[in-house]
Image (cartoon, rainbow over all chains, first blue to last red; front, top):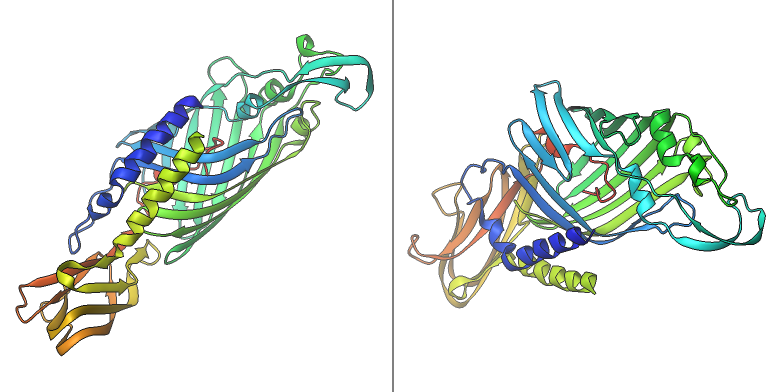
Length: 277
Length: 135
């Protein structure tokens, strides 16, 4: 996270000093310049992503960095590394390496002294309890991107290649955007199937983690549902204002875990964004 | 504290950019509304009425041009201000400018930007699933 803050500082300073000069990049009357391979931007505002774990803090969103590079075949997109295998009028297919996003919740948990177990039953004595930690999983998979007048569809299938959870995830997201001059509205909806190995690694409670506070738990496979609504207003060539609301429902096996307090994960953000063009 | 610093820098940078919407060289002030038009695959052209307003201190002969044609859009005789509504269908950025009697003497120029918001590269629209992905 510290690296993110330094990167954000550097990016904001660069914008503050040279942002406006960038708007002269395309001279009037000239053909549009070829799209840059880089996509650099940042948004600053306020937002939150609720943390479904017990004894946890919500995840604040103050800065959103966007750092991406797209080559003819290789690309880097905010931590994802991809190799595009096919790109035609019907589909763009890529091999992608990424880190699983479920781990993010486990980075915002607290250690507390509790007088009841996670089911609410009183304990004989006050006990220290820490939510077990989980590792990031390096995953490799295939990503299919399709679009048209009907909208955009993204389908991915990822498998753990680092030996962290040995599971897999299949994900689909459909989005449709409306633009009316500076306004842009994009709702999206989707689901992600998580295998039992993946689900159990993050949401299960292993034998060595069991305590008088935390009972054992084995999670099976399940499907998360998600929906998102984004409203954007383009203030100028580089600046925009965005409102985003996101909702994810954890699968039943994850939600039934003693580590989980809420089945619903709500996120929102409102802020000003800057993108180099 | 770092968020406060970032916020101040951010807020300082934004109005500086938005303020660049008025051309004001040579005492001639020229404004155009709208300054920005957004196109994409579904709507590849901007069909808009641009309102051009100019003002200067001296009464004189002035003409308004744009770089979509060689002839002036309109000229004013013995005037120090004026306005003109220009209906256009455009697909790329262009400029308006004012001249005095000499059409080569541009007193001030202002650009209207046509911003293309879509891309032919589907990868640029992919959704990443990190917590910070709110673009």
